[in-house]
Length: 452
Image (tube, rainbow, N blue to C red; front, side, top):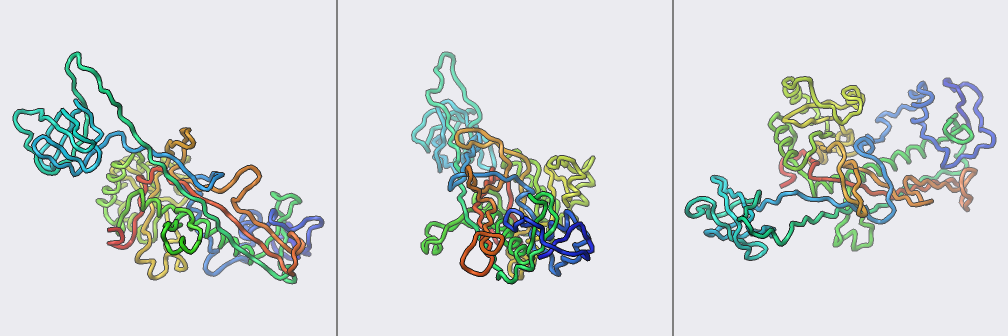
């Protein structure tokens, strides 16, 4: 064993610190150590294809919290107003495809795409059928298929009030838990490759690392990160579930595909930006999106931004960053402003990595970009209203049980004794995540017809 002790040249005598035992608690990643304490050592850690760790996407866009059960739930309330599409009209009788939730004396605004009419509800025939009396002279004259919504009501003097109230049923959004594991072992005779370093944050002042184990943990962290983004919960009747395999959690992409906004092909023109801004305005109150893009989408945004920002007095809105433009630049975000919406754009390396989604076939089908809303929303959890970021990662934790990144070491001088002549590291994480207001997110694929 050896120690690097205040010695950037690594020429002094190397030794094992007295009374300090190597364990999971004082393991330190070599690259992290060099960055923090001895940057001159970084060239010695050079890896020809990069370190391999992916962008900390999840920590940059949300926060980390804990949960104690097998499910993570919150309630989301839908729109305040209800619009009915595909309503058929015959004279003054309206038949809706879904319950209309109307009451007598309510006024509805009606459009067939050419003209608009107004009618007062005079009779509720069924949950999907009502009679509407024209507010203008003559027949209603808008037969066919229409769209309508109620916007007011009208009463005679002395007439009694409504006898039924409106009710809104929240949608209960559920995500599930997923356990992710990894394993590393090394023969006891090879433990001489353990290197000790001064690390003041650990008890005893020293930490240790093993390069191969560090690489294993990097791979493990990547699996955690990729699952938060691309994880797919198996369907109940899938072959995997029938075979008894754990069904797992839903990643961000799956939840947006189920409850959010989808796009085909790259955004290449100003009109595309305006289309996305308009869609966002239709869906909610968010006006700031962080966009995580591949190389081609970044190039397209650069071209779009050169014309868009030139016409905006004062530049874009840096509202999501606590220190404004300087913080945005530090985090490698470039920003454009279009039609009242700020798009903060940064590369997402895994989309171009040839060992991940930059591989040949994935380059044709994978993501062009992810658009994530910025800010917080109020949701109901366990009957209480709480403010949550639009996206948060969650790890299983309750009292003395913590499954955030549990590393158990067995064998040798550093772990619990066992029968084999080796050191083993067992890694376990139990995680989930929470996507709030998925209707404010966008998943954009490169392929022109991926989402039909």
